[in-house]
Image (tube, rainbow, N blue to C red; front, side, top):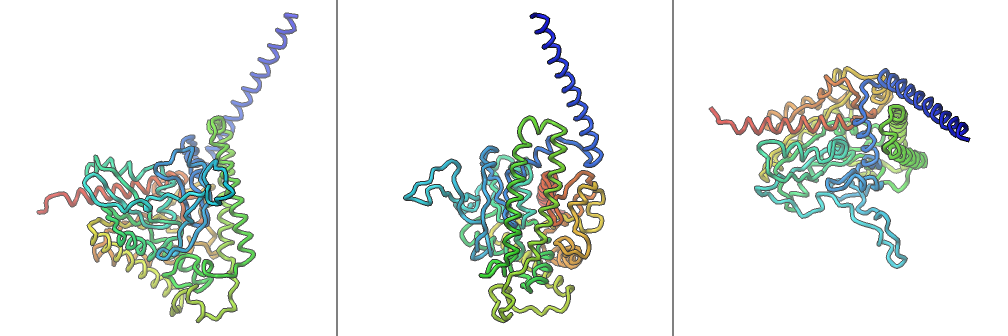
Amino acid sequence: MRSVRSSRIKKVIFYAVIVAVNCVFLELVAYGFFRAKYGEFSRAQLQQERLGVVASVQTGPVFTGKEADTTEAESKKQEQLKEIIHPYAGYTVQGSRSKSGCNLQADNPWACKERVVRPEDSPMPKRNDHTLNVALLGGSVAVGTVNGAPPNYYQKRLAALPEYQGRNIVLHMLAAGGYRQPQPLMLLNYYQTLGAEYDLVIALDGFNEIAIAGTEYKRHKIHPSFPRSWKFRMSDKVSPDLILLLAEKVALEKKHIARATFFSSPLPRNSVTFNLLWKVMHSNFSAQLSTLNTQAEQAQVTDADTPEEFQFEGIGPRYPFTDWETLFEYSAALWGNSTLLSNSAAKTHGGKFFHFLQPNQYIEGAKPTMSAAERAVAFSPAGKGGYGNWYKKGYSYLKKEQARVQKMGVHSVDLTYLYEQEAGEIYIDTCCHVNSKGSAMIVEAIVDEIHRVNTLNSQPQP
């Protein structure tokens, strides 16, 4: 009897050793394959990437993301929100979401709804010696520096500066996916009209103003000053193909969020093999999402039978378009004028204004070192459209406008080449969006520049 039991124990130990050896071998093979295909292996960065997928919820161009005071567990419960028309910004996110675990009451259909609390919903910030009020303007890349970077990264980096030590950093995110000038200017004026007092106004933009202008005009002849997809937002007839594409996109995103949640659990996140599987799935997801976005951009709003002179609400004032060069020049000038006015608005109300052109992979030399995996998800082929290719065509016009606004007193810095020396993966789609590391690098560059200027201005003048 004892020998039988001993034999069973030996078998169990033998099989356990075999399984352990195979697991170690599999982990080593997975590690080698990961390094060969994706380069550096970092559990922390991969986990941050997954948490970014879980916490940053995307509907169209809008990210709701994680609030500054939201716990990691709460951030995983965030839901997709719809965009609605806004009287000054063009559009914003819908102001309600379902409470987690709430039991719906038959006599009150809104019992399980709550307002989406954003910093700008709070009482308008007032300037004082103990607080630094910061407004962030821009599109989805600007939003990514809040939701995609480590939590409260702006606050932590600014609070560490000698000139701001001891002050409570309050960040008001006036950015949203797809925003382009003059939308940020309108929002800044709106909140300052309501009484907001910002010590710092940070603008991170330039890309949407050129890229979206080209795409929107080609599809619908929308005026370069109008918000993204305005004809779609104002139309009462929507392409059935577009509805199907958007439904497919939502299903894809939900499925990927479920994957990210699973791979974030203790066992998968510490396994090289599971991390490799995640990386492959995430790369495939990014490629699929990019394809769906491109297809959705090309889907037409079905009101072509309406004469152009009766479409003012949908496409804006008549624009004397002659060629793409005039469109880029006109769009760049709109951006420049809006930036000048944003600078004036900030300074008139006692604040400082810092502008930054966001990075983009399509500009020659902006990120010369890319892995095959990053290159596969980061570029739309030339001649195939895509926001990045439009931006590449219009970048020179934007640079001319940047030089003009700099001469007129705007502190504007070009971050296009921020990743020039970065060999690791940064870009996550064919537009302009970056991973957590890329977002953190943008925040660091912005805060370092603010500190440099503050230090320079504090020195005695000769």
